[in-house]
Amino acid sequence: MTQDTSAEPVREQRDWQLLARMLPFAKRQTNLFILALVLLVPFAATSAIQPLIVQRVIDGPARTGDIAGIQFLGLVFGITVVARLTLQSLQGYLLQKAGQRLTADIRAVLFRHVTSLSLSYFNRTPIGKLITRLTSDVEALGEVFSTGAIGILSDLLSIVIVAEFMFSLSWELALLLLVLIFPITATVTWFQQAYRKANFRVREELSSLNAILQENLLGVSVVQIFRREGINDAQFEQVNRNYIRAVDETILYDSTISAVMEWISLVAIAGVLWFGGGQVLQDALTFGTLVAFIQYAQRLFDPIRQLGERFTSISAGFTAVERITAILDTPIEVRDPEHPVTLPEDGQGEICFQNVWFAYKPDDYVLKNISFTIRPGQSVALVGPTGSGKSTIIRLLCRLYEPTQGRILIDGVDIRNIRQEELRRRIGVILQEGFLFSGDIRSNISLGEQYSMEQIEQAARVTNVDGFIRELPQGYATQVRERGNNLSGGQKQLLAFARAAVRDPRILVLDEATASLDIGTESLIQLALNRLLTGRTCVMIAHRLTTIRNVDRILVLHRGELTEDGTHEELMRDSGIYAKLYRLQSLTT
Image 1 (tube, rainbow, N blue to C red):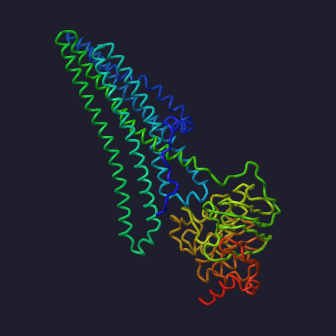
Image 2 (cartoon, rainbow, N blue to C red):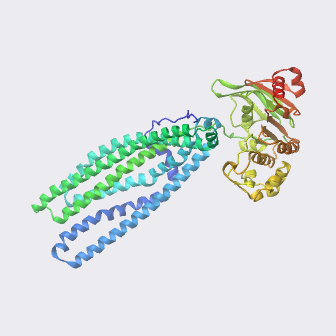
Image 3 (cartoon, helix red, strand yellow):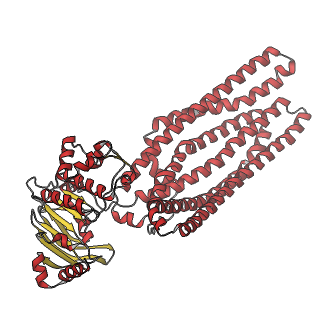
């Protein structure tokens, strides 16, 4: 499994600082949140007035036998019930709507940021962990702003209003109940901190679980071929057990705090019955007031109990904020310049590497002082042993990474001064394995850009792939399954050629692009390449040296250094690294 060397530590920030990072997203839903806040007062009031109505019924009409009075107060009670349920439903709808919009905004910003990060970030971060950040972590964060934060305000307001009604009836009983709030507050605070730490471990274990799932599902063919089902099952079982243990810890804290709150509320009601019952017997308190106080005790401790539950939810949300901000704080290494330079329209695709050094890790250079110039229209092959730096040169040319030192120029312009969109529009890249997206054949060639059907068909004809496309069930409208699983490797590679041709690039990059094709298909592609390369600069990586004998130049790399430069005939006469590699391949074929 990919090692996550970028595991984000718990960020040493106060909760309010973490929350402030997310406020710009919440401000976009200001209208919904304000409307939900406005509903808090009538909602809390309708809930708090109901015990008072019960007290009025018991001490008034019920005591005197006034049926009309009972019916009237019963009608008022029914109205408050309907009003409370209506306000509760409306408030819940508004909060859920605001929360879903907020999480969608955060997820969109996260996705945009993640897809802008350099490849080095993805090399050290498992994809499964990123998926966890973009899904469950964002959902947990949405709870903070939807039911969490507004819910706490609602609960606090309910406590204040209920307390006012209680003091208006009997300050002794009210004081008895309010004193119990202090141990409750201390209990909630302690458990909230413990739950927060436990929930962070849950999120980390869930990330590991998703990472191993993603890895095994993508590599299921390798797993089955090498009969690793048992080994991988044991690995998954261990990660799964770690996740369950972490979840069990959060359940323990959550259940404990609920039980403690329940016991305290029962003690409070018992205290009301004991003290209030004595006052009723002494005629210092009416029976209706005692009944109302028991209901108020329930209404007082219900929001307090909910506060405990909301604090666990908010703790999970703060954990998610820590992990999300860790991604948002990851710098985007490859950015568009503030004042971009446009490539000349009459540029022919000259490539110049000037003293380029590059290291994936500090002081571990894979390219060392590389300098060469490829003239417009030249075909140049990069060859050398595995790990010599061939693919790294391609990645730097496409600006997937920035050079550690030196410059790369296209038509005399430093590529760091060119917008990435324009740079990659001028460079057509065909990799060894063509990646296809879900959608139809046409969309996989255009990749969302506005090309007409005629342009797409023309590109397919130029690259000799139009015939195979028309043999598909729906032709260009044939749906492609995930990663092109309903097409062969050769067919996917053919579409990659059409994808490059439709963009009419000045520079064409081929990374062992014909390796997965059979001899018949490769001959068709070779004819297409001869047409496609006319007037274009071409840089290709080739391991089969027999396929590059006719290129204009061959650059030989060895341990990150450019050691040889010349035509096939010149390098064979020099009897250097290239000649040895070529003769070795000739002996083995």
